[in-house]
Length: 195
Image 1 (spheres, rainbow, N blue to C red):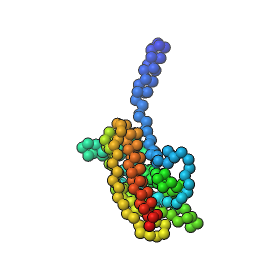
Image 2: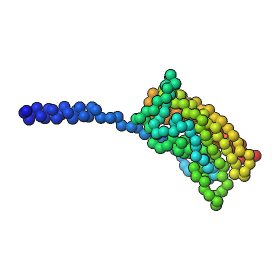
Image 3: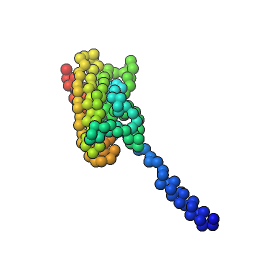
Image 4: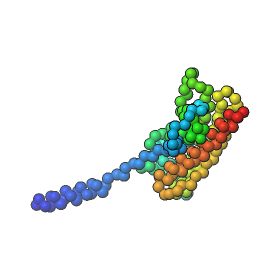
């Protein structure tokens, strides 16, 4: 073999190896409306968002979608950057902070010395994600006032169109659907303040 033949074989081998490279996973995270706030908001009330529950079928790192023929697909290359239930709780907390104009919305109980807190529990009953179509999130939620008054129970079914064919558009639709749920929870808290 000549030196040129060996060099050509090496180049062909490198090109073949590069062409066989596995796709790389893309990781997604949702953002709440608080990212749009221009300045910090005053602490007017305290709210604690309890851990969120989600159905087992979507409680996984892969983004779970439904096809037109009702099959479920797990995309190994489109993944949540953190556990979905933690991401949802964080987004709801950020949305509530913005909607209630308070900086004191937490995912953790602040303890005995903290001011009285509103308590929010969210149970996601279903998440139906159809690429290029819509995301529908069915949530049951409960709001308990700080004075041990009556707990307000609510249900929100939020359906948001997916404005694109890629996973970024699908994730944005999830964010908007969670915003609708947060708006209903914030309205219940505001109504409870007036009683």
